[in-house]
Image 1 (cartoon, rainbow, N blue to C red):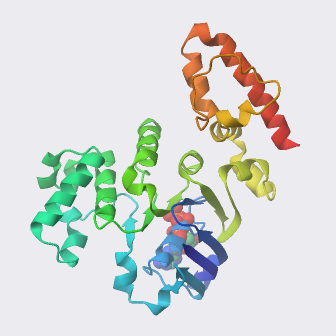
Image 2 (image 1 turned 180 degrees about the vertical axis):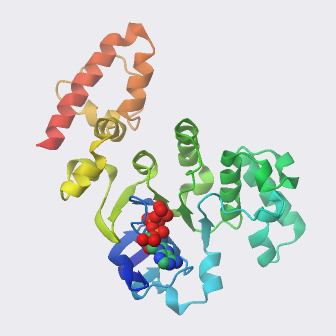
Image 3 (image 1 turned 180 degrees about the horizontal axis):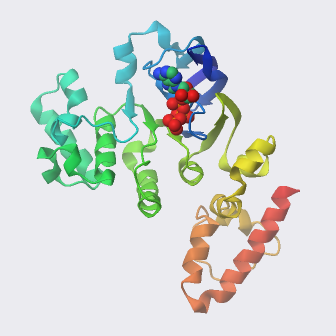
Length: 305
Ligand SMILES: Nc1ncnc2c1ncn2[C@@H]1O[C@H](COP(=O)(O)OP(=O)(O)OP(=O)(O)O)[C@@H](O)[C@H]1O
């Protein structure tokens, strides 16, 4: 568990991060969300002491990060940097082997683990002898993730890990990311300015503005229990889509007017957006589509009461 308490950071007297507190629970994906310059990256870098906080404390599993060696701290954390952060003059193989080399792994162990990760991340072995600029943006970002995961750290810090991808590629990668076994037991703090990404990946979201955390909560809490107008306005542009994506089939099943006789073949944790997309691709399912939309609208009304 990561516990951040009353942490601040000033650059040239100006607060970049201003008295923030939050917790990232074990095995959750906590997203730091906000517009450019609001202090997300500074916050992330304070967790692994790439930047030292000026005030406040950060504990990881109960240990103050100031009271341990920086190298030890960082060995327990993978860091995926903005724009992949690969060393341009290193081959992919060398880029991935940075941490194993520091840990003095033998060559065979590094090669085996590298191959395992490339396979899991759907990368082919032929990229190992290439340089980063010979790979697509998506491939580079996957290599960045492989590099961060190689020594299987319990914590993963990710700074705009999918930032260079277009929206269609992003949506595919989000799905894949969520289903990666390798990530399931990790505590992940992920920085993004992309609202949809925050909603698709985050178990909880810290919404930041001007160095402060305005609200922390689940995606649903952000939508239906917004703390103030800033939060409401931040999500207003995509609101309907976000509501579809955060509402699950199980939420609607409990509604009294939901026609459960219809033979919906969806699991309880499927979101309504996904179900509507599937139903809309088949005209014979028009009635099911209508039933679902009616139930969704009733659910929305109840949430907003
Ligand atoms: N090394 C630095 N020196 C001076 N000012 C800095 C430094 N690093 C960050 N800042 C300033 O601190 C503020 C927060 O920056 P930070 O990079 O944390 O924001 P961010 O939310 O991650 O933005 P982005 O999404 O654009 O990376 C900004 O005003 C930035 O200009």
